[in-house]
Image 1 (cartoon, helix red, strand yellow):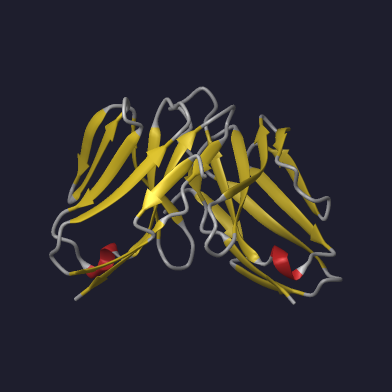
Image 2: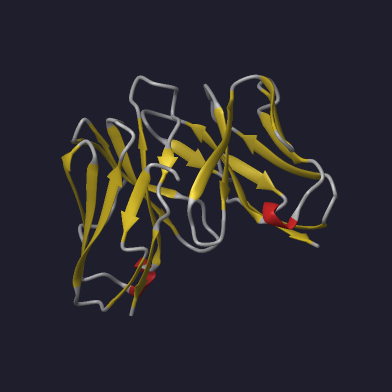
Length: 114
Length: 108
């Protein structure tokens, strides 16, 4: 049990669909992250939120739109995706000012774009 | 060249064997993480270390700051150790840079 949950666990969507990924952390952390993990590639940081404010956008295409309504919840809104966006999307959280860079990961959402 | 490189990329072992996975990095760090990712995707933090050696059960992690190198050892390996092992180093801000991972398969 990691304390970070993600829904859905699996998602298949067409290129014209709009869907959202949800992440919730139950650890009282104040920073949340979205990562993309493609086959045979290292984890790629997409977005970082500290205290609900976006502090990093790692040149992510606008078809990915994050939302952080509070410190416990993080969403990734998806629209007009491409097949190459198929990947595992991982959410993580950490405590800014706590043990340096110790991030707790959710189980991920396996996304397939058809 | 990646800032964080792991070797080997794939490793197959027989149950009971001693396993070593290596991580070399080219960026300055305050701490290095070893992570484990099981099939299905979830990632679990195994160790975070900034010097010396840490041990947890059958897992041992060492780091040499001067040589920018860390190793993860598994003693008496077991099929349930089969997973992807990833090292990660903090680079800037909240950013972690990850290695590509080592796929470990332990056969009974």
